[in-house]
Length: 71
Image (tube, rainbow, N blue to C red; front, side):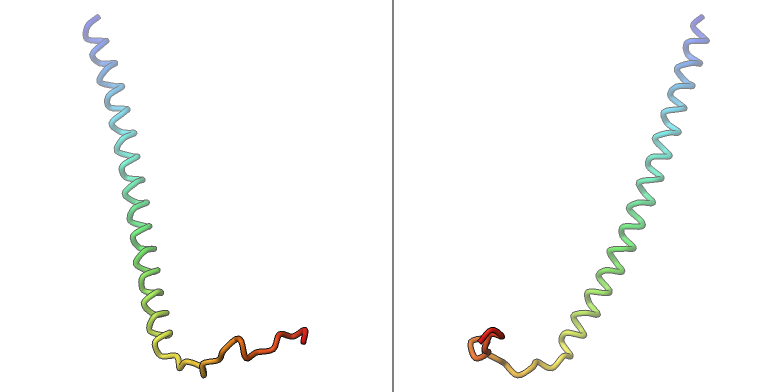
């Protein structure tokens, strides 16, 4: 009677452990994919900063000098 109870407990523990391992593996993959996406976004942002730095600013204009279209 005691052996059956212990075997059942071990079976439940093994089942829970397997589920926990699967969950950890899934979370690790999620973190890995997110890190790759963050790295791609950082690269894109750095490229945009480089492009913005190379743009020549247009002549400064004062919006007060512009006449609205309804005048």
